[in-house]
Image (cartoon, rainbow, N blue to C red):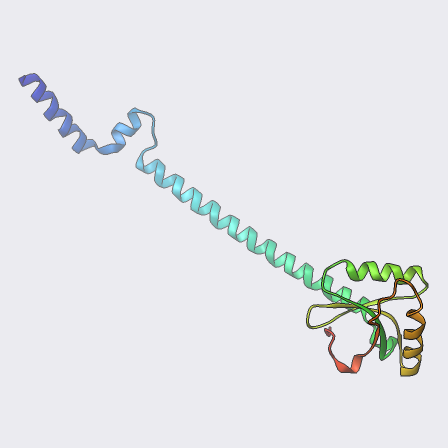
Amino acid sequence: MKAFRLISILLVALMTVTGCDFFRSIVGKPTSKDLERMKQEALEQSRKQRELDSINRAKALELEKAKAAAEQANLLDESAGRFHVIIGSFKVDGNAGKMCAMLEKNGYTPKIIKFNNGFDVVSAAAYNDYGQALKTMEDIKEFQFCPEDVWVYDINQKLHATR
């Protein structure tokens, strides 16, 4: 019994002196130093990843702005005319492009005008003379693909997104 007591006391004393790291190293588990090093490595990796994500977001935003500016510059040439014959207004991306393809197939040179409210409108033609725009609007209504709500937009209204 005294031997068991002695071994128990020595075991308790050994545990208090050496701590958990001793036993963790015996069974092959990481010690507190290893855990701290792994924690620091994870924090450093996380910091680097946040930095890369931030750089990638900035590049994507810059690319998106450049693309939007180039698209807007190509889409609405205000010197082409003051009055635009609008054949459709679209909120869903791609629908304006489909309407442009339909107009091109029928001999028009369409333009897409981005409005401040998020809609893309398709201009079939642009004129400086309001009468010509009305005549073209009536001509376009003869096509089977043409919707009923064709209208003339005056760019002086400034409803469109500016560069």
